Amino acid sequence: MMWTRKDLVALSELSAEEIVFVLDTAAEFKGVGQRRLKKVPSLRGKTLVNLFVEASTRTRTSFELAAVRLSADVVNITATTSSLSKGESLKDTAKNLEALAADLIVLRHSAAGAPQFLAERLQAGVINAGDGSHEHPTQGLLDVFTMRERLGRVEGLKVGIVGDIRFSRVARSNLWALTKLGAEVILIGPPTLVPREFERTGARICHRLDDVLPELDVVNLLRIQHERQKAGYFPGTGEYASLFGLNAARAARLKPGALVMHPGPIHRGVELDGSVADGPHSVILDQVTNGLAVRMAVLYLCGSMALKEEA
Amino acid sequence: MTAELSGSGPIFLAGIPTRGVALARRLREELARRGVAAECGAVDVAMYRDDLGMRGGVRPLRGTDLPMDLDNWTIVLVDDVQQTGRTARAAIDAVLGFGRPKRILFAVLADRGGRELPIRPDYTGLELSARPGAKLRVRLAEVDEGEEGISES
Image 1 (cartoon, each protein chain N blue to C red):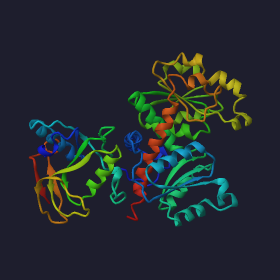
Image 2 (spheres, rainbow over the protein chains, first blue to last red; image 1 turned 60 degrees about the vertical axis):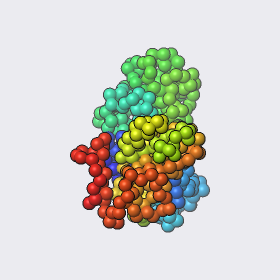
Image 3 (cartoon, rainbow over the protein chains, first blue to last red; image 1 turned 90 degrees about the horizontal axis):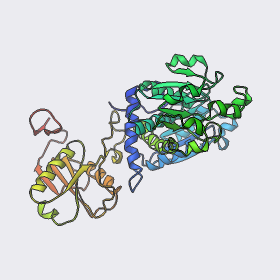
Image 4 (cartoon, helix red, strand yellow; image 1 turned 180 degrees about the vertical axis):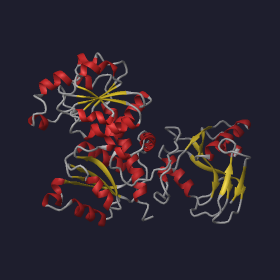
């Protein structure tokens, strides 16, 4: 097949074949990171704008480094420095960026659907770097990339996603990628954060981590946000940790070779004990390295298509 | 080629996918028969091309397999057809990403003319003069169906 999209908005839209295409491309870009010269000229002379209307240091840095390694010029705009805080609409901001000849826009926004809105209106390629509770497609891709790299396949894996499923774009993007590639997904957490309606996605729902832990090939732990606690979705971090935290005792019940993942930043002692985060099951730092390769692949693929018209 | 390569230190034949890789393997056999040892692999030029966005879609990357440290190696780029020189230019850039080889040489099965960059092969199997817009097809047993050969269409 050939890649023909200028935008990456949601994994729900991608076919299994397209997802595998990105993963294969990312594997080649991971190889570039091991060369003496870690930079290729694919996007030389092109401008990428990191438009982050919601704070995120890691994702922004990862996209920035990916763009630099593709030889693009990068401009970072965060909400506090932009006119968005002065009431300019997202569309006006984006139109202005395009008038400045931005070729790619990486957008992080608190409103679900914002990247789709821009993608439909701009010639520039739009990459979703997280929109509300909707999707975080590059995170989903880097998670399945890491599973495939470590375990040799995705199909048939039993993957537990633990935590705040209800509000998590990471969970949604993982769910789409994993089910499309034939993995079995088990969503784990308290009923308030793992509502029954997720069964429609084909995933299994489980409210007790201890019941399923020994059968999992992958445990992907999501960050628990304190805002959710204030809103009454769970009683306290102590109780959450005792029921759903991956501590050393629980980690001892993991299958040999099972992977422990976390999108970061980790709350050590809440979702995950420090000893487990640094232990033999953990692939958390692989995720960071692979995130760079996946983002290079996405920028290369979408960038190639976004540049098509002017060529 | 044998005379030029013998005694020049480690030699790597870097085929440009798809058919250049098959040709590099054949060349290695031929050199071995003449007493010159060489390794071979592939250099994908897609990330180094200057025509990003000029095609209908993005094709899969095809893998690069070069020595991780190629300082002091002699690298021979191998391709099926030489035309504009743009692929060779991209391949040179890709190789330089792995270090500082002693020397880069360039071998092609057929040179069809139509150069756009000042890059010419060091070794040419066959000189052709194809019409500018014509498509030249090389068929090799390792890659293609049917009888081996070069045809213009």
